[in-house]
Amino acid sequence: MKRYKINWRVPKGEELTELDKKVLYYQDKGHLVPSRSLIKTPEQVEGIRRSGIINTGVLDLIEKEIHAGMSTLEIDKLVYQYTQDHGAVPATLGYEGFPKSCCTSINEVVCHGIPSEFDILEEGDIINVDCTTILGGYYADASRMFIIGETTPQKEKLVRVAKECLNVGMEAAKPFGFIGDIGHAIEKHAKKNGFSVVRDLCGHGVGVEFHEEPDVEHFGKKGTGMLLVPGMVFTIEPMINMGTWEVFIDEEDGWTVVTEDELPSAQWEHTFLMTENGLEILTH
Image (cartoon, rainbow, N blue to C red; front, top):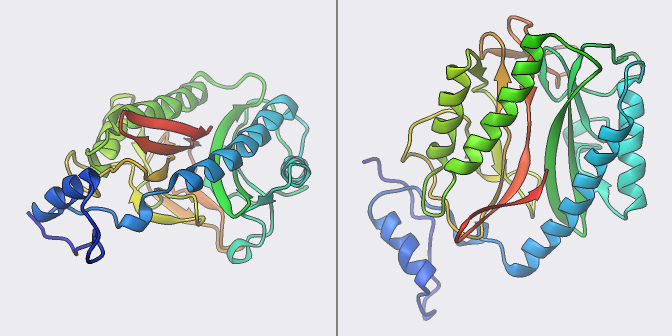
């Protein structure tokens, strides 16, 4: 087995907890384990949970308001206003130069679509709205798919299977399992339904920062990747494509990720806390 760097360190003179003993056992066996700093304190979890309530509220609002004829800029304004009104900040606004308060990704856009007054939703479109909220320094991140009116059976299936992929990934994530277990389950379900999984983008640790370790890939082998330890907070956010898994970034804006074959893509995302009994959803 490949040996990884020593991440889990117990300060000298500090008594080993049961958790320390368990994680050190896996580390000694050569597995990749998180650092202790990735294990959130009860106070941090509570902060992320509060942020998650607002994050979920934003997406509930979009679900109520989204309709054909609406511009994605209007969606962005709703996200900004709701977040501000609840004493929070949209994390994407100004992040590495991103100009808006959420990502709006229509049809063949996989993710990171920039809201615009010129992007008008039409009957049959499928759209992902991705919001990250900061409240009191704590981050919560989620996205949902919306179908505008009636769409094709193929697009409807894509949206449904993408949601199922999130659910099977969630079920595969067990305390003291591995990140690879999640990706393996997602890829298997997507392929079974004739779809592919984007490989160039992934889920991630979140909570104290926008993006933390570990990377949560949505493909892979069981028993590989980082050990899942109670107290870790991360997203699962599979991007499922109707055609090839390959994507490209729009050169004009440097953000928008599009499927290589320009066939539709769908994605759902939750933020999760790993507990001793499995995953708890913090935002959806």
